[in-house]
Image (cartoon, one colour):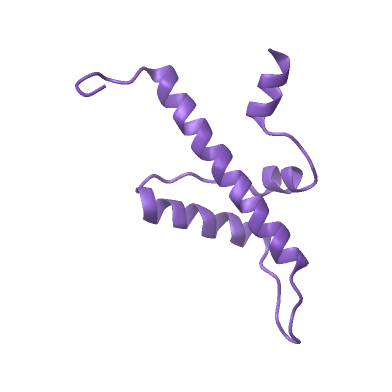
Length: 91
């Protein structure tokens, strides 16, 4: 609603959804990068580079910097679950 401030809980929910979306997008980029065939002399992008590129692209679009941890994305790429999914399963 216009003219009303958002509660802190709602702000955290919105941020968590954005972070989950970015993580999901970065994992998709990583898996497609790993499945890609390379020409001789070409290297695959590392998980560090993919995290940085995804974070930079999000910052360019929204002006909000969200840093992604490469270790967390490596776990998600191997089939791990997100914090949101874990908490949802508990309730």
